[in-house]
Image (cartoon, rainbow over all chains, first blue to last red; front, top):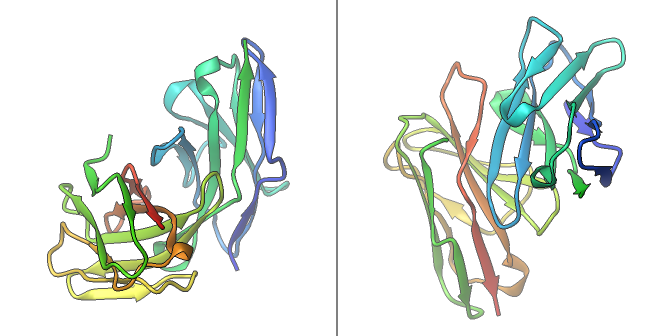
Length: 112
Length: 112
């Protein structure tokens, strides 16, 4: 069965420092992987996706993610965090019949 | 930004009332989904549709029902609301052959 795991409930980082939000996946076949962000009382906003091609994927708001097949990981990264990046981040994998299967979410807190 | 709209955004109703959460998209997407999310928690798929007159139950059992009479419209109905139905409901859509699922802003339901 397809699944993703987000091992950290919360990540704390100082503004200006690089950030990483971790995600590992388990799929049969080629994975379609996604990152979404959710701000308080809002829906999910699409950040980026990996389908095929370059392992480093660039997305919205300066975020990028690195697909690593050998480690079955798809970590979200940003070189310099902003306070406004504080939100809930979800990793997801496209499951059978095109449904998204989400991780449990990681709360990112960026401190001034 | 995706053109997918949910109404109402916030609703407080009494136990036993019938409610319908509306979801519309103007992108012509054939696939639509309903996810349920408790505050700050992971998302669970409760219903999906691959086109007009097609509806399927998702991974999480739900007492709600859905209909898909028009491509752009995918309402969710609770015949008799209970406090256990208190949650956020997120509507989403995608196009066949596309990879990204787009979300609406969500509907917060509180049953008292």
